[in-house]
Image (cartoon, rainbow, N blue to C red; front, side, top):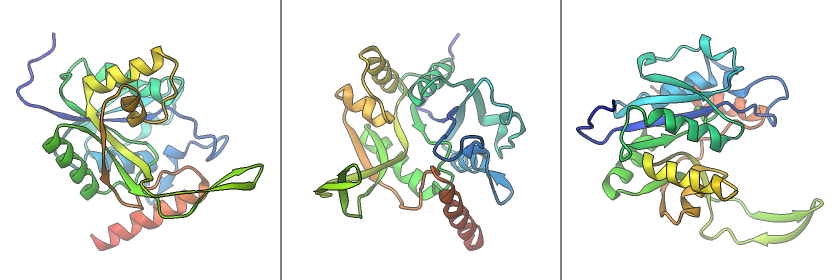
Length: 238
């Protein structure tokens, strides 16, 4: 029986069931080491560093043999469920799991497992914006570089970057709204690249909160080196 909710809570979901083939055909990027912790440990610890986060659900592969060795600073707030074939299925599975002990009106932050450099300031800014305006929102940064469209490595167009933003995570929405949006997209065979795209397809408004350029997603091996520099510089400052 679901317990009554006395106030709106904030949860987190970290989909970590992907293989990350662009990083390596064998090594899983979420378990690469940065200093003395894995990428996933850095990511989850950063999310749970905020006291306002009531818990974090990790969606992992049923064949994941590494997850049991992970040590998180707030282990009592970490939950696990099985992911799915694609990111959208993993997030939806985590939302179904979360719905067992949360309210539809609670908020959820969905954050990439391979973004260990998320800052507490960005997290606070996103949560404060959503809480104040009662909307869905994502972290994003303005596109800085000139964009080129190409075919067979030949440039066909220079793309106007005015009003273009590079989406990041976390992406934050009410649990009920996000479930509805993801279910709608899957039922209609629509392409979902992130949670915001599912909300957009369901005609739900999504706002932008400006994030930081160092909130990188580890996609290629060289990204791991940059993430290490970012995290090491922060530890030296603190």
